[in-house]
Image (cartoon, rainbow, N blue to C red; front, side, top):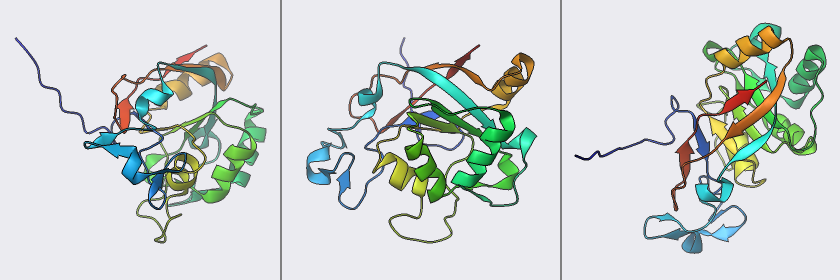
Length: 203
C-alpha cells in the first residue's frame, strides 16, 4: 500500500509558510543570491523552507481588526492602523514577536508598504495573517506586493499566508489577552518554496 500526496503549497486556502526564496526581487532571491545559483534542477538550492526549521517558537501578538476596528473595502492597512489598534488593545510589540493580523475576508483588505516598514521598525520575527497583499494589486511593478516583495524578498521576514484565525480570536477573548506563545514547524522538504503549517497558540 502507498500514497501519492500532491500539495499546492501556495494556495490561498491553505495555511502555509513561505520560504525566503519564494519571491524574487529582480533576478535574485533573499539574501541577494542570483537566480542562476538559487535554482538547481527545478528546486531552490538556497533560502528554501528548511532554512526556517525545524521549528519557530516565539511570542505571538494578535491585532484583530474584525472585533476592534472593521476595515473599509480594499483598505490598505498602514503602520498607523497597526499602531492605533495595538494601543486600543493595550499591547506592546517587542523585538522577536510574531505579528498576527486578522481582518474580515470580505473586506479584501491588504498590507501596505508602511505596515511592512512598521514591522521592520518593531523587529517582527514572523508575520501570520488572514490578510496579505492587496490583490489584484493597485499598481504593477517590483513593489506592487509590499508584504512579499519587501518583507519576504528584501527583509527576510517569514510569512504565513492563509491563517485561519477565528479560533485564535475566540481564545484571546476567553483569556482576556491578545498575547500567547506561538509554535509551528514546516515540513523538512529540501528545495521547497514553502510548506503547510499548523500554527499553535499556547496560553
